[in-house]
Length: 137
Image (cartoon, rainbow, N blue to C red; front, side):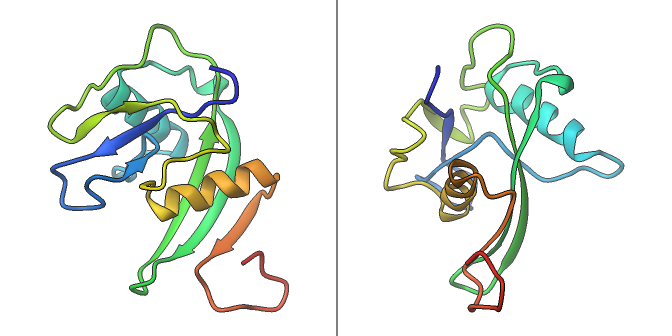
């Protein structure tokens, strides 16, 4: 869907419940970031993305208002077989396809930061950190 982004509504996880986020997750031991992206897409939205169809989107070093840092590597793709579906109904309240420039107000701030950087063409950015010389904050 050109100009749109797939988001998952988190529920029942204990982290950011009732907020939208991208299909995503944490690296498993011995896993590459590309393998992780492919695995998470399969687990969360039921699509088998070919690793060669992933494009680097952006990297965000995010500091939450509570002081928890997070480093995220974001990928983009517009190719996959089949239709995405909610493959984890115990963790996801549903899927949405908002316009990439009109994310829901209840989007995880970390996700919104990564999407904003991607839309702005910024390869690596900081969000939430005190202003630093030369930082993209």
